[in-house]
Structure formats: C-alpha cells, structure tokens
Length: 520
Image (tube, rainbow, N blue to C red):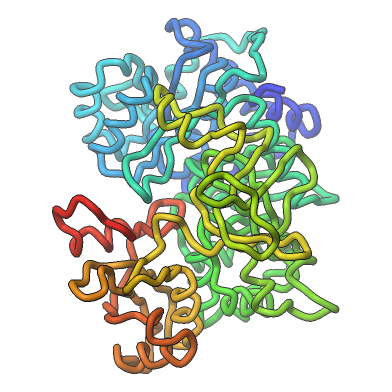
C-alpha cells in the first residue's frame, strides 16, 4: 500500500465524520472536505512539475492545514521531509539543502525565516503560506486554482515516502529513507498496539513532525478523529481528554511527569482514555508505577527509532501488571517484547556481531520490514549501520527468559571511569527514584584522575530543598561510590529535542570544549 491509501481507507469508512479538529484555530474538516483539499493541493504540485521522487516539507507547529499539506505530499507521490519548527533556522536550512526539498508549506509565524530560506536554498522553488497571504500565496487561495481531479499514481511500495531527519541527539541530523512499505508497517503496528471497538479520537499534542504524526495518520486509517493542539499545555491536555472523549494519547515521558505533578489532577475526568502510549525516551519505573495508579490500565510503551520507522517492541497494557497488581519495578523498566504483527527479529550482539545469550548485555540489532532503506546520499554510514541485513541501533541492552527487552544505555552514553563501565541510565534511574527529583541526565566529564567522572544535571520539584551532598549520599547507598555522581548541577530545565529526547551533548559540550575525543 501507498502512504495515501491509509487516508483513503478512513475516507471510505467515514466520509462525513470529523477528520481533523484544530483546537488552536477552531476549525474542523470532514474526511470529504480534507480529501478534496488534498486532491487540489496535489494537482497544484503536479502542475508545478513536482511529483514522484521529489521532496517537500511543512514548516509549522501542530496545525490542521499543515497536516493536510503533509497528506497532500503523499497524494502527489512526493516524499515528506518532517521539519522541526523548533530547530534553529540554520539547522532547518541545512536540512532543506541536504535533503533536496523543492516545496515548502509554512506558517506565517516563520515569515521572517523564510527570506533566509529563499536566499540560501535556491532548490526550494515553491512556497505556500498555510494560514494567510504573506510573501507567498495563502494555501486556500492557492489550492482553489487547481481541480480536485483524481490522481492515478502507480507508486512502488519500495519507493520513498518519508525522508526523516534523525533527532540529532548525537550529532548532525541524517536523512532516513523510509519507504511506502515501511509506512504500511507502521500503520499496522499502531493499529495492533491500540485496538478500539469504536472510532478512535486522538489528541495530537506531541509534534506531528515526529512519532505523533505517524500516530495521527494511523487514526485516519481507522476513520477516527484527530484533535490538534499547537503546544504542550498540561491543563489543556487534561481538559481535552474529557471535552473531546480522547481515547488515544501519545506523550514523551517528560510530559507524563508534568501531568503527574499537576496539583488538581484528580479533579479531571480521565475515563475516556483507553491508551496512553509513551516512548521517545525511557520512563522512570517509579514514575511509571505512579502513572499506572493515576491513569489506570491504559499505559503502552513502544521502543523504536527513526531508522526503524516502526516500534519493534511494546510493553502492552497487560504487561504492566502481574497477577492483577502493578508489575514490579524491574518489569516496568523493560521496553517490552517483540511486536507480533509484522516480520521482525531482534538480537543482542557483541562488538564482533556474535549473538549473545539471554541476560548478557550487548547491542540490540534488528531486522524488520519497517526498517529504513538507508541514509539519504550517505552510503558509507548506511553500510556501517546495516550489516548483513541487521540494523545496529546503538542501544545497549539484553533480553530476559520471558522475552522482555531491557535498554541499559546508548553506546555513546556509557561512561568509562577509572577503568569501570558505568551506564548513565542506571544512575539516572536511581536519581529519579528520589521523591524530590522531577528528572535528570547523567553524563561523563573529563577528569585527570579517573579519565571520566560521573556528573548529573537534576531538576527538582518545588518544595523541600535537596543539596548535592544529600543526593550523592543517596546514590552511594543504592549503587555504590563508583557509579554515584561525583558532582551535580541543579537546573531549572534540561535541554530536549522537540520529541522529548534529552540532548546530552548540549550538557557535555561545555566540559569537553575543543577536545577531539568525548568518550561518553
């Protein structure tokens, strides 16, 4: 199937039902209205010489018209480049250049940046402003010039549907080539992990430029409704669950932590929620146990990465419980078992690509029908990442006797101190277990004696103070002096990508400076 076929599937099921409700603009679109708009936009793109094999992007916060433009790129047979509006303009200009974008739909709030794009990215030859006329035509005026004629496309399932920039947590973003086949696998998995008997209603508050966009597309495939919020507002999320009868929600763990800290949380009706999917970064087992008490049996964890496209493991609603009670913290630290609805194989390998037995720690490698074809115009990195058909994730972990996978750390986040390997995630779990801590990040810094020293950046809850010595002592009691942080910075916030992943390189860089080697 092609990416656009999933929207067609939803249109066939519920042509007159609400497809998109944009809370920020107070506009809504039925499946029939959205289909007509995507046909006109796609015909406009084809009239301008764009189509199969070409790339286009949407530069906008979460927005109904922006989402319609994304679907329109699929209808025209083009490849969608998810562009993070929170990136620095220089980074987005680099992506538009590197990934050969030729059309850019943008929100007027970025008009000031568009002049830089025009000057520095001559390859972008079509600009359309999604919400009003600016230096470019307004979307709805632009599309009105084109017919809503059907577009018979013969798109190979192995052709590229998405050129997805990586999160950039370990360096410059790369373009990941995801095919129509990969997209179909994603839709299959998302339907499998969150089945509903009635039309699903999804709250799109996580960025549509990331995993949240795939979830939204999967809801349309089922004839459901997508309620769009432009920004993360904790009270807005809680109000929307009751107001719109939200049945499916995807959030990164940091936003879940924020919801748990809302003082009036118990006053909100959360009963419509059937699935609260979480991922993008690990969740503290202690906070997950708290979430299960608050939200009930609705939590679903997914594990994947941009290069895999689809989640390859899932900790289902039932996996969060053992004998009718919240599962032990050890189970809650798992990222689940292999998804069973597609062809996927996961192994744990050592540095010379030998399979390791259960319980032994190594790198997680994956074979999947959803995995990337490779990196755009980067065959060397592709060859290093996909070896003998196995995609090397860069995640270190193990599998237990019951088939549950555990991520210990990123290979690049392992700290070597005094000859000992310290996994930053293990230290983070201990620090996060302290009742005064909201979240933390652990990383290595240069040390003349130990080579690297364990350092933590910690965000505390409002209320009682906690000093460095107390928290270091707490860690030493639980994991010993070698793994306990040697120093702690208390911060107001931690740097994150738009998808909620910690940007440890931002925390590390001031300490490593111009050194050529940043081990951790």
